[in-house]
Image (cartoon, rainbow, N blue to C red; front, side, top):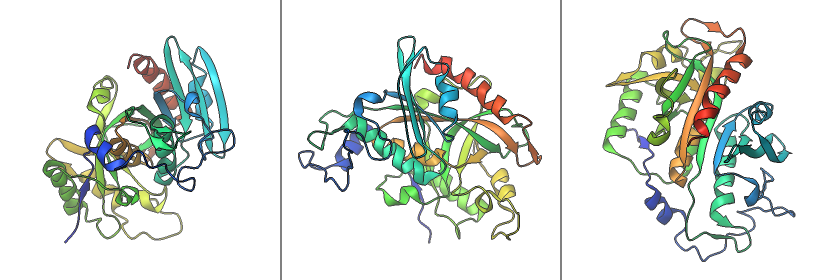
Length: 312
């Protein structure tokens, strides 16, 4: 018998589940604050982060986004984590590089939440919690013939083939439990993964319709074997791409896969934040084609999304 998980946590519910007693200070071994009063990995202080945050995987892409800002107030890099905070008009924005993979997203989402929802002086959770707006801008591989290279995908759900969300307490709903059960039944991937699923924020998804394909974004814990690529090693599931491409459940199909979205959606819901993942397609795994200029596709995605983000 398999266990299937779907993250459905309301903002009110997660307030209760995060910290039963907010008066208890969080230990220095758990909430690590450096000598300048900044969170450990991001090396960023609460006043240095905006409430609307664009995440990118590639550290070099932070500057590609922030070059469109009217003004930049803060720049910092610590390890692979690059942060720029600035303004477009009256809208304050931050761009943060997560690096690659769900494990890095675990660091970034938890630390971003700590910056706005924990008092660094007392180490106590704020009495009123602040939801962030988090927009991922990344690259992906298409899993449908009609979603071409250089196109854009807005993920309706993030479906994780990694194990990150299994370390956190979650709630389930019958409807989305059925979606996961259908996925496992059709793909037969239960031997390598106990998948989980979380949805995009509906209030954000509705802003990204024109010129965006919609569908489930599958998040993989690697780039080669976990995405069905064969170089020198044989694969446990060489038919992975075909199984993902063929999945259907009611109106749902899998549009694309990459390495961060399910972790962002899952942790974002658990923490009470509003998340959307936007991806430029650089590979089509059905037609076996690759973009001739992936950087140009990403730049067009940034130019398409930023004017919308400023209005959120």
